[in-house]
Image 1 (cartoon, rainbow over the protein chains, first blue to last red):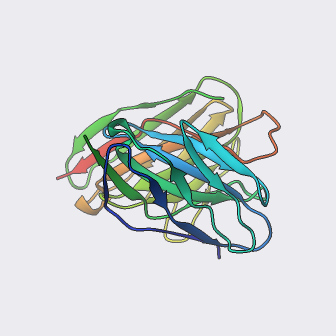
Image 2 (tube, each protein chain N blue to C red):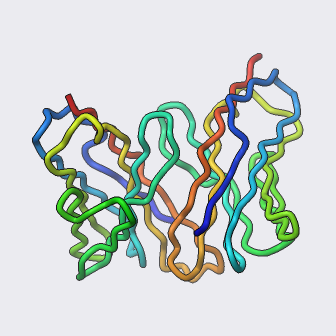
Length: 112
Length: 117
């Protein structure tokens, strides 16, 4: 079945540091890929998405590229802020059933 | 996009009782889902709520424990029955819109934080 493996945290960075959270997936065909973010005390929000190979999703300075050859969708940001502190979830979905399969989540803490 | 609300936002319940969680979407949606997020864990899909028919449950989840209703295109309920402390989790509703997007974006409600004593 489908699965998502993401880098386990927690990850602690200083403000303005570079961020990479690794995500790889196992699935047949061409699923859609997502990064969701959960800020402290809040619900889940879609951060960015990509629907086909080589697509790059971007939002709020975050980027992730759909790499079919390595089955990866790593999340990157060049300069993190304290306000980026949250839990980040990588996920995939199929157009056949639209169910989301999530990774375990990575807690990011950014210190001033 | 879609705005999703859930009620209650949180509750503390006694073992053996049941709680019904409501999910309301501000627009008609094609599909609605219920997820569980246990403390410190990722989200696990409980079931797909089908409008006008029985929900489709994932492995490990059964209708007697988690009955689901979806009477129309904007509303669904999840009941957690005969609760035990192991049911303490955040329960989230999500929806996929009619937008005809080429991708499978889902929107999530704020969640219901359930504590069972």
